[in-house]
Structure formats: structure tokens, C-alpha cells
Length: 373
Image 1 (cartoon, rainbow, N blue to C red):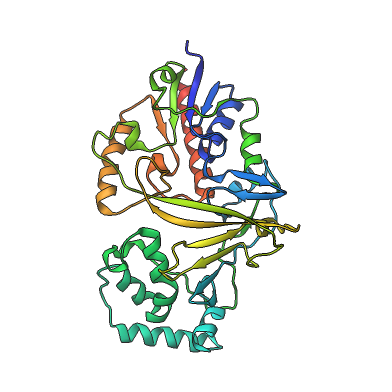
Image 2 (image 1 turned 180 degrees about the vertical axis):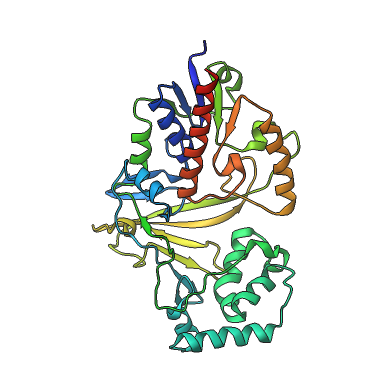
């Protein structure tokens, strides 16, 4: 008999939910994390009463009532509505693209006028079969919106010129012909009062957790501890890159405490021109309607990924997706490991989708295990 039923590598949302649900079924879990804290990328750190999103803005939103009810077991959520703004050469625009945006761009006042302006620009471009991201974006929203609000931001985000990026990266661009700055259309939206870390703390209460523990540095010893592994890291690394390396994008964060009560008046401000090296500035206190004499901001810089940096986003182009499929087939034959989350599944997930996936996986795993027993 091994010491644990499950070794869970990664204490982010997927790993914490798996541990919580398995623990409820009397399965013994050990959660490890190479970082010095739990929570993965949704970790929030309280600094002078401000809950700082250490790894970028995380705004919870979903249309799934069951998911909303599930996450509300662990925290009360406020009524925060994501209404980012964009700055291009000192011009300020509302996001998502809506009537406030169009009025600022062209002086139009009615949906009909805005639609006609966008359609006019699309006709002038004359793009019927987009060959790259630039052509795809222009074919969707026209030249003006593309140049001011899409081009520079996207090139910074991906580290490549828009003409060199595949068209499928932008399948659609949300265009709304209403005066509504709410970025998400989801029924449920908000920020957990007190930050996301409290959610993970409640999920992992009573479960063995070891921090500052790198799975790969202690692999042989750790694998002996549990019957099965739940792995939320990079699937290619787990298999020692046997088919080659998958590609990722990284991020770099620079936080700053300022002796002002309110720096930018909004939680998220995007900077869409290429010459500004960061993509956005986050002012954390606005997520929870914070007060007080000081504020904390974070500049977010897209970064080229190397093995020494944190992988944040999979690059789901054809080449990488084909390579991932090889690892996926390998994992399907491997009865000792379950993969989950963005890195384990090599797929971008919003938080509600992570919850859906984790609950589905843990249910299938524990049901099948119970049947075998």
C-alpha cells in the first residue's frame, strides 16, 4: 500500500478541485507545488488591504449555473463588471468594441451609422479569403479598428507581426452595436471578496500540501508515494519531450506601489500601440472597490518562453496541435497519470471551464476506480 491515493502536481484551480473532491470520497491526496504558495496563476496576495493578482487579472465569469453555485461554496463574489478601456496614442476607447467606441472613432451615434461605417471599410479592403491574422481582422472589423485597437496589441501578445500570424487566431472579434461596456455577456460575473487564494485554502483544508517542491527534481521519490498522479504541468515535459517541445508564450509582471489613491480609474487599461512594450496596466484595488491612500499597479509584458520561464499560454497552431496529439495518445495509454488544466491539456481555459473539466475528470476517475474496487 502506498502512502497516498493521488499525488497532485500543481495547486492551481484544477489540482485543488481534484484534491477537494477526492478528499470528500476519503481518498488520501498529496498536493505539491514548485512555487512558494498555493493557487497557481489565480494566486492573490494581500498587500496593505489590496488583493494583488500576482499573475495577471483573473475575472470570474460563466453562464453555467452549476459552476457558479460550486465556486460560491468557497467565497462570496462581488458585482465587479469587466469594462476595460484601451489607450492608443493618448486616445481612450471603450472595450469591447461598442457604440461608445464607434462614436469616439467616427462620431457616429446610431447602430445603423456604425454598421455602415464598418461595412464600408470591409468593402474597401476587399478581402474574401484572409491569408493571415491581419487580413482576417480587417475582414471582420475594417481598417480603423484593426490599426488602432487590434494590430499593436496582438503583435505584442504573440511576438510576431500580424501578417506572419495565422488567421485562425482571431476567429471573431466582438462587435456590439449597443452603448454597453460590459466585456462579458455571461450571466454570472464577479471577483471573490478577499481574493482567490482564500478559495484554494478552503479547498485544500485538511489535505497534505508541500510547497517549493519541484516534481522533476524529486520524481522517483514522489512517484513511490501515490498510486496515481494528477499532473497539471506541461505534458511534453512529463514525457521528457520525447516527441519534441511544445511552444508557449510567457508573461512578465512589474508591480509598483504608488502614493496616490487612484492611478488610472479602472481595473484594466490596455495599451494597443506596439511602441508601448506592455499590453496592459492592472490597478488591483478596483477589482474590489478598494479605498485607502495608496494603490498598486502591475504592468504586463508578453514574453518569449524558454524553459527557465513560466509558460502561460499554449500556441495552438497546426504544428503544435499535431505535436500535442502525439502526447495525448501517449497519455491515453498511461494508466498512472491524469492530465489537466491549460498545460496538461495544452489548451487555453477560462476559469469556469477549468472547473467543468476538473469536476468531470474527478467524477469519471472516482466512479471508474470505485467500480474496479
